[in-house]
Image (spheres, rainbow, N blue to C red):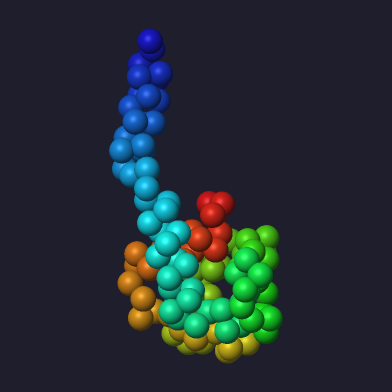
Length: 107
């Protein structure tokens, strides 16, 4: 095995160890809890349940990048969503990260 192959395997193993197998499930559950507790479904639908004042969470996946979603959530100046989206900067980093990855699972 070449040195490059060894390094590749080490990187793969390190990335697997860094993300526990259930981390996606934990983040998914946290994001769903936040979507319900923060009132997001008053305006947005998730899996056919929720409001129709704005696009569904599923639709956001085709429209916004993770960076754009993060800016929509944490924007104290209120310069997003025509000032209709509240600022969620009161949420901690783990909660924001969970929401961003849930809304946009593709990096």
